[in-house]
Amino acid sequence: MKNVFIINGSHPFAHSEGKFNETLFQNSVSFFNALDGYNVKAIQVGDEYDPKEEVEKFKWADLIIYHTPIWWFQIPFGFKKYLDSVFTEGHQNGIYESDGRSRKNPKINYGTGGLMKGKKYILTTSWNAPKTAFTLENEFFEQKSVDEGVMFGFHKMNTFTGMDLLATHHFHDMEKNADVPQELANYNIFLDEINKIFLETVETPN
Image (cartoon, rainbow, N blue to C red; front, top):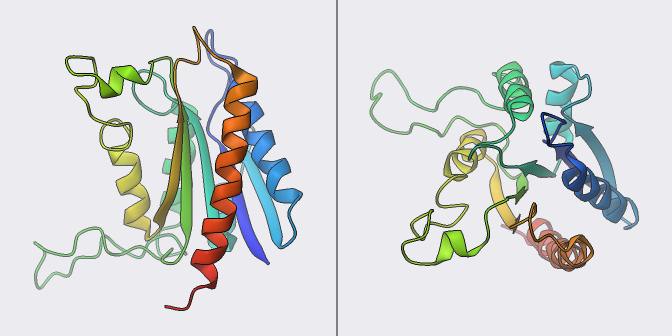
């Protein structure tokens, strides 16, 4: 059995009700619950949670799925608080031991003290920005992809813990031109592909 931990990083704030990420979150939970061979745990960061219990979910999981909207080019403040609280609680308790350096040579090996080696993660993000804002010359994001640009630090955070990226899926133009049924259909195709890749990854001997 494989263990999947699914996180909805969205929560209501101002004009954002978080409905799309709630739908994605429920879709992911239903998808993996319907498959043989998976155990599923989940959290919505807008709900109450105990950081100690959340650490145990990360330690339990083989695959972590993050769903988040992007607010002002960053993750929502409630999601950031969740990660700060849980990962700090996981210091020397399953998430990371140290920053990886030694006092003998503190200039090298930063970021190698993670304790979640062998675990995989998936990231989805949703944007008001159209995809062309990332790809066209002279447009806003200067032809840097979501993963190379705004989410670079998020990926490094996960690398710091020892996890490896399995895949990303980004949703664009979700405020002005969203075709939610089509986006969900595309996402389910993505999940089907991910399921195959993940099973191959965890079943292939090192």
